[in-house]
Image (cartoon, rainbow, N blue to C red; front, side):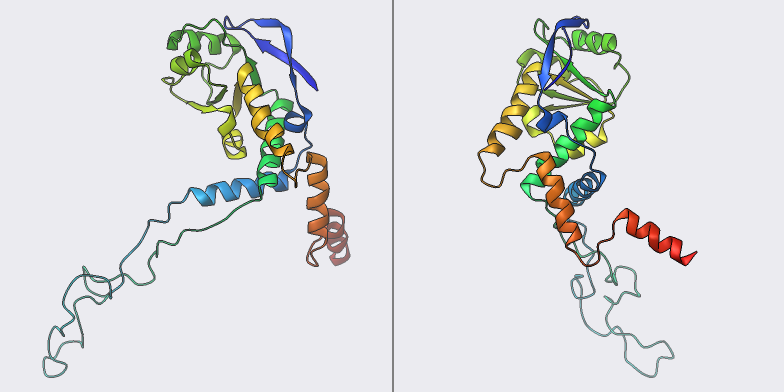
Length: 250
């Protein structure tokens, strides 16, 4: 359990500390897992609605525009051919939804690695919004005192009504319930702010609930599992193996 500083509603450091679970905030770096999670989230964000019509889908007649011979002009069929304006498109987008997914344990582990990185970088802040009156001005003042007034922020709350009401109008801020956060959002925002209730909500969502599943794994167990699965692949090469091969070629 790590003990970190908790800021009050006035922007001052509280005398009390907040305890953080190592399962969410004390994981070792895992760039491979973060890269895979980021790729999956980006891919799934595509709606797959981009679509160009082929010559068989464009509305219009299929009649030959003029006879084959005797006109002195090039041979053509219907006006829906790609060569004509308003005709079909050749090799255009087909609107396919690119499906990518990650196992639930990888999703949770990626979030824990991302949060742990932000904590090590001192980019993770914890506040207790108790006493905030729900005005946007008070939230802006609080962030300014903490030193985050001009930064792109990810605010994770635990359902505090006054805090949510005051923070939702601030430009450059992404406001989310702590139970809905994912690794993609944490990576995309250089600074993350968690409320005291948000920490408890995150612990309940991502630790207590997952421990009830039969395939639950801690961060260290998951890293070991990933390493063994990658090494089981005949094409896998460790960093040392790659360096040795390159040295031989020199």
